[in-house]
Structure formats: structure tokens, C-alpha cells
Length: 105
Image 1 (spheres, rainbow, N blue to C red):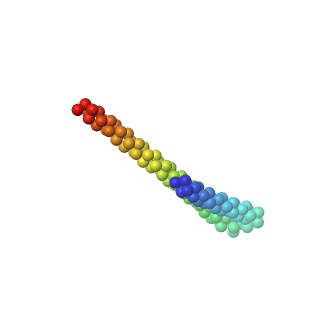
Image 2: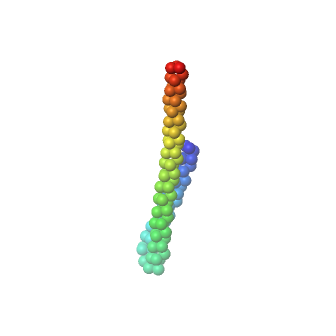
Image 3: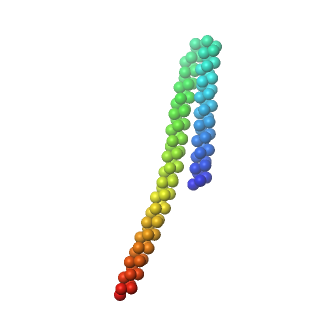
């Protein structure tokens, strides 16, 4: 589980780094087109910025889903542990009841 969590963290970090670079490049392109005074670059820069924003939103969703998956696995592991403990306690309590019944006979 720790290895899976670590690989998910690594993947999330790589994806976030990629989107950061895309956003930086999109803003550089927007700034450069303003400095050059070329109005024909405006729609292209806006399109790049829009794509970068969409990529950012998708990246955020992916990271949230990875976190939810990790939490889901942790919760499942906790529930399985609790179930095992409940079963053990039931066996102990039933074993104690049976032993008392045998002593009374």
C-alpha cells in the first residue's frame, strides 16, 4: 500500500509540474503577443490560455481522484481490520459462553 501511495504521489507531482509548465508557457505567449503589438496573436494566445486552464482543471480533478482512491483504500483496510477484530471478539465471547455451559453440567 505504501508503494502504491508513493507512486500515486509521484504521478500527481509529475502531472502538476507539467500543467505548471503549460501555464507558464501560455502566460509567456500572452505577454509576448502584447509586447509585439501583434493583434493576430491574440486569439491564438487566448486559445492556449483556455487550453491551459482546462488542463489545469483536469489535473486538479485527477489529483483529487487519486487522493480519493488512496483514502478509499485506507478506509477499506480499516474496515477489514475492524471486521476481523469483531469476528475475533465474537469467537472469544461464544467460546466463554460454551465453557461456562460445560462447567455447569
